[in-house]
Image 1 (cartoon, one colour):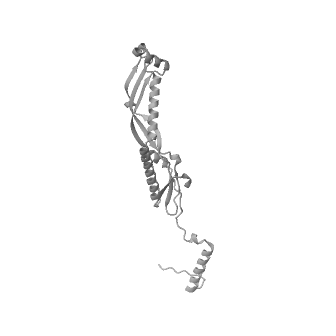
Image 2 (cartoon, one colour):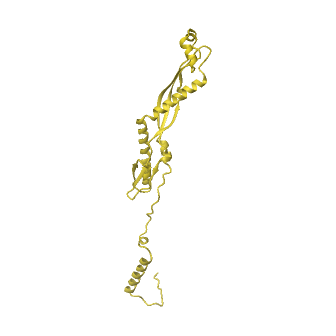
Image 3 (cartoon, rainbow, N blue to C red):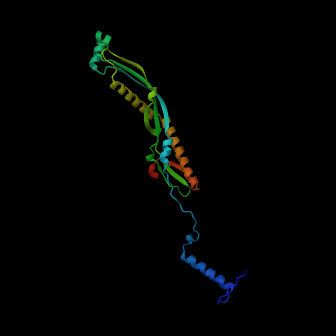
Length: 223
């Protein structure tokens, strides 16, 4: 059905209507900033790297060592002299203890995630990141693998619990020192952690529709 609307106004000419629209547009331009006219949803949101701690845990590198702990002696200078220079000492070995254990040691290499620094991406999508070198995080023993190779003692004595504990602790400390000097494994652990963190950052960018690249720095003050 055709509608007819009656008004008391006279019909305006096309020229007047066009002029009115132009004037209105000019007023809008003068009132609003230009960037508001072309505003779109392009607000940069800061990236969050909350899962970097979990990523570093996944990057932990484990290495197995064949470790030994060996001890022989009396721990007493006087008994050592007696056992060395007297016939009775040769026979009875007063206070003598000999103990030898072997086991599989487990060393964990990893990165201290609290030291990691990651910047927001720049205008080119470059993220600057700092990560310290990996280090020895933990040294343990596979208790099921511990075997006593030798356990001997002199007359009227046995290898004490204290001696066994000291031998084990010394063996663990020696393994920890050796692991800390293993530059090849430290380098590999560092490389693994960087690779996982870099992929993590890129995936965050992909999720926001951004292509990110990572630039590693050796100075965390750069970030």
